[in-house]
Image (cartoon, rainbow, N blue to C red; front, top):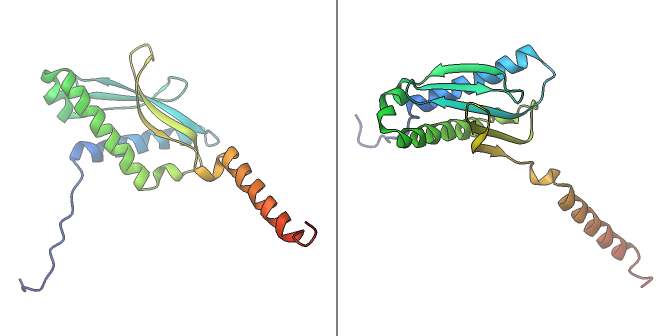
Length: 161
């Protein structure tokens, strides 16, 4: 290899994170296919760590996708620690989808959140959220418009004051 060639290191995603990205994307695709006009503001996730199973539900608590992450099942003997590892991997997958602009799809309404829930759909933890972009924030928008109007008025009527 020539000495002047550059080596670029690319950090690969962990396998479980890539699998989770596909599972989440498949779940959303199923929601869109079954109801093309549907808006998505929330997803629920349930984990069964001894089996490594992840289940994704819509806001109406209807199962839309389930799959087994074998890496999690292998770690399940560690109990709570394995749940933390799973949540870390899920967050990584959701952030990866965000950077891939997956959530720019207009089917996602803001605020959007993904929550870990128990068997009774009681929220255990919010895993991921997307807030409204700042330019949609009505208070800030109105304040900026009001300030622009005041500046315009001052310039327009400068010789009157």
